[in-house]
Image 1 (cartoon, rainbow, N blue to C red):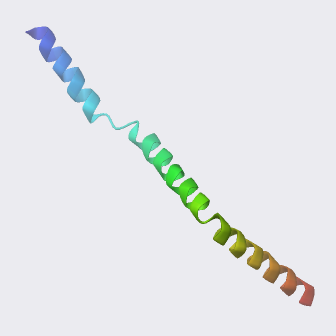
Image 2 (image 1 turned 180 degrees about the vertical axis):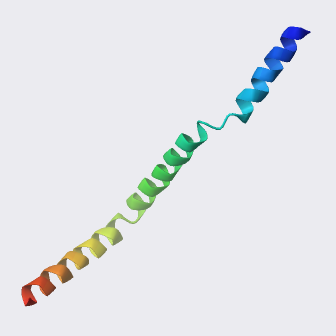
Image 3 (image 1 turned 90 degrees about the vertical axis):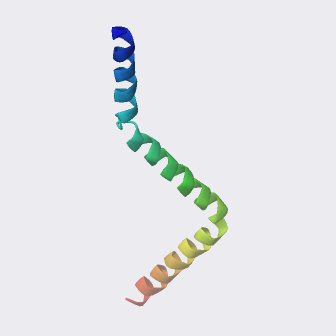
Length: 62
């Protein structure tokens, strides 16, 4: 009977432990961001190209 309480306590302690949750959350966020980049790759490329074009044009005026 004493061993069951020890195993049960270990299981409950393991379920309450949250150390690994930060890593899982970070990985999920990275996966979502990579997915969004892949989906909107063309639009993001156009935006970045337009920004650099504007920066170049404005620096030429100075």
